[in-house]
Picture 1 (cartoon, rainbow, N blue to C red):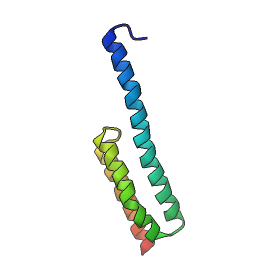
Picture 2 (cartoon, one colour):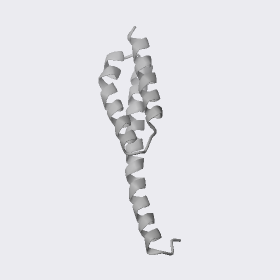
Picture 3 (cartoon, one colour):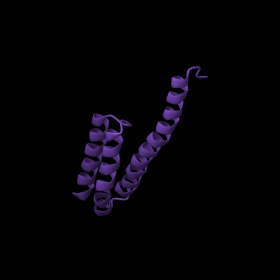
Picture 4 (cartoon, rainbow, N blue to C red):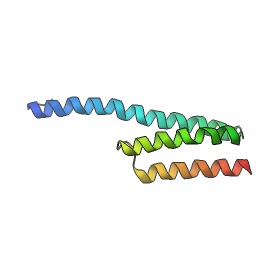
Length: 88
């Protein structure tokens, strides 16, 4: 338990940040999951249409420090590559 007032304030801020961080991470995971399902179903056009939404969610995660930049770039690259392979 926090003793000082500054520690209590930091704890409150951390709880607020945790809510936003989990929301951002969840949005990125949801977008990735929906694209992965479309890739599994071999529907490249629908997956390509959802790619900007995934990239936006990942970029916002990076901007807010939820995810590292290289991790987001790696995910974007791998998903784009998977879409290219099923598109033929």
